[in-house]
Length: 291
Image (cartoon, rainbow, N blue to C red):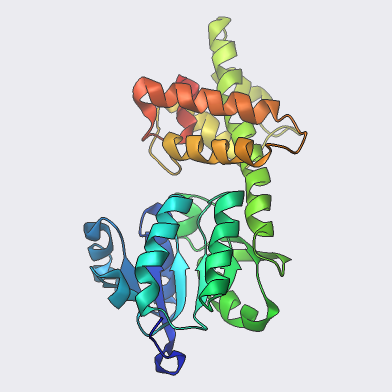
């Protein structure tokens, strides 16, 4: 790390990863007055943000040089690790690193260790929410990290989310919470899909399932949205089946050695894998209905 923290621009943020969530994060930061740089492994995705006031970079070291805040929003732990290692030459000690990706237990602990070794101020901050909440700046941020730079971190979280839950002052706690929450999301998704499929298999119009539950104690906005998408055959991607496979596997892997048997998580992983094998990997997780 050859850079000097005194050369940083306080409101300059480097966003590494501009997929569905990362692109929305970058746009919302610009709208809130931050100077935003973007890098993505597929350069065209970062370049597409130029029209929104984001400055795209083809070189990851140049993207992070002089930025006071680094935000990583990538598919998985290996992708984040590869990117941060490549970016190291441009990072100054004392740079604030907000890690928004869902990477699992092993990876988050490894990334936190890398940050400590390189003098980065690290916040483990996975988000709850998919395409629409991200675009609307209504993500929920699950944040863990030191008290020292929380005000700065919070300014970023306020720009991209509607609520921040501070979980711990130790990075890693948020990623563990995110796995538990994902298990719940996947259980709701598969439960909705299987319930509708059961009704159809038994000769009942599955739309009657939704009608019967509407307004009752088992109703929810999530159930309504996913159930409607399943019945319409609208699998436009907010969160893909392939990412569902990845995140469900992270849940199952994290529980190894704990003595807890996560039957629903394991079955859900199998259902996602079946959907992916059937060619639905790039579709929304509502495509569990097709498994």
